[in-house]
Structures are given as structure tokens and as C-alpha cells.
Length: 218
Image (tube, rainbow, N blue to C red):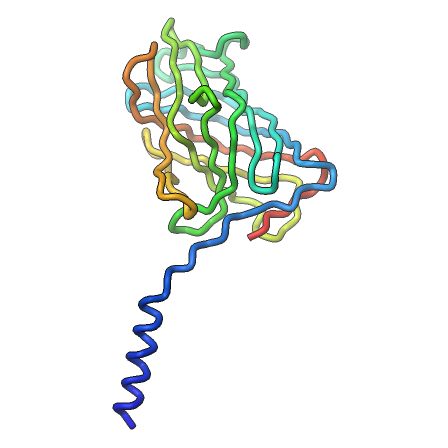
């Protein structure tokens, strides 16, 4: 009898051993009745590239979900200055101290490891996130993407507001991979078209749907 039970336990263990790991489902979104347009509002943003740290006081933006899992967004960073010299910097055509991003595609994703909902923002068609001038130097932020956690609301909880956290330590983002892809997403900074170096962006943004409540679906 003991041998039979042991054989059963071993067989069960072998079955579970060969079963593939179950990945978290890609999040989707039930859009509001009034459509997928939203505004974005956030506090301070920190830009780092391992050489210099640049700070902006606040973030605004607008965007649209063009489908349940994806859309486009454009941010404005206000009150931007270098932390050491206190020198303002900004994008062409903007007031002093204001940086504008390109219109950036985004996709709902699942953060690798934690299984938490996340958003992946990638570069515009020109390969850039943004460009701005600092002390006569044209700085470009490029790379293949930045991933932020969706910290609110929870799944299956209707809400007009969604909170996105893009955390970083030094020049490295906290989340760099998703369950949907083997790609590691990183940002890069370059000056006057020179060699790119790794960099990061750290900020929190609260998006508010103008057309009513949306619901994050697992």
C-alpha cells in the first residue's frame, strides 16, 4: 500500500513539473461610456542619466485609449531646472522651464515577477520620447520603452482616475520587463547627437477619464 501511495505522489509531482508556468493575463480596460479620452496630472519628475540630475516641479498631459489595451499620451513637464546650477531647461516652442514629450504610444501590460498591472510607454515614430535644450546642449531621451506600475484602482473596480508610478533608482527604472515580452525596456540620454548613456525618469501621474468611469479587467 505504501509503495502504491508513493508511486501516486511521484507521478503527480512529475505531472506538475512538466506543466508550463501560467503567465498573468494582459490587462484590458472597459472604456467609459463617453470614450477613452483622459487628462493627466502629477507632481515632481526627476530625470537622471548618471551624470546630471534634472528636476521638474509638476506634470500635466492628455491622452486617448484607441483600443481597450492601448492608446497615445503626451506629457508636459513644468518648472524644469538642473538640480546643481538651478538653470531652467525646456523644449523648443515652450515657455522657459517647460518640456514637452512627443505623442507617445502606450500599451497595458503585466509587470514581470509581481504580476501587477502596468503600462508600457514607447517612443514616437521618430524614435524619441522628448528633446530639450540645456545650457545650449540639445538633449534627446530615446530608448525602447518605460514601464510604470498601475497602483490604483484594483482590478474590476470602476473608477474615473488611474494612478501610474514610474519609479527609479539612479539611472535605472524599477520595472524593466513585462510578462508579455522578453524585451528589457530602458531609456537613454544623448547630448547633441553623441553617444547615448542609460537614464531614467521618476514620476507619478494620475489620469482622469473625461467620459466617466473605466474598469481595469484582468
